Length: 167
Image 1 (tube, one colour):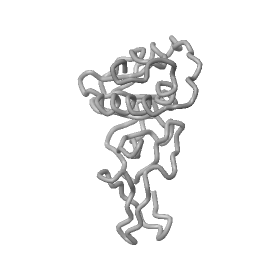
Image 2: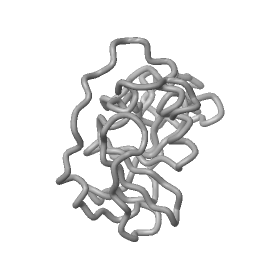
Image 3: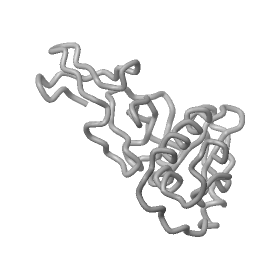
Image 4: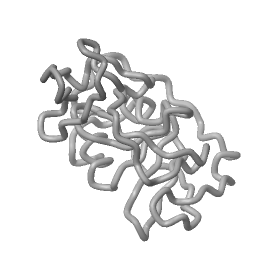
């Protein structure tokens, strides 16, 4: 990603949830331009991990002012388990619009076999145990969760309890 002011490469500022241009010292909020339906905004760094679906290097980005890795092609998101849990709690507790209509899980998604972006072992694909009726991929060795584009939004907007005790 390049600076809108001077064209230089922008660097993610993890501490402040923003991007920073070292050339002109322009700072942009991480929430300015999301590129996915889940609200990920791009940063300039590229990860060493590969997307489990597209097999291209993941990109660093911002999600709710936190750094995540995502695929710029399919917009899937890689979380460590703790970050996933805190993001779900935060999103569900702040969501105030109408709940989305519950949809059944697509059972065909449970048959997929994707490699872990961290260790390259096959991840477990399972129904998320919280609200949202989505099939998620996780690696118990690396303690990561992979969400396809839109799955975080489905979890956020799903009917059900919104207190931390039940997430």
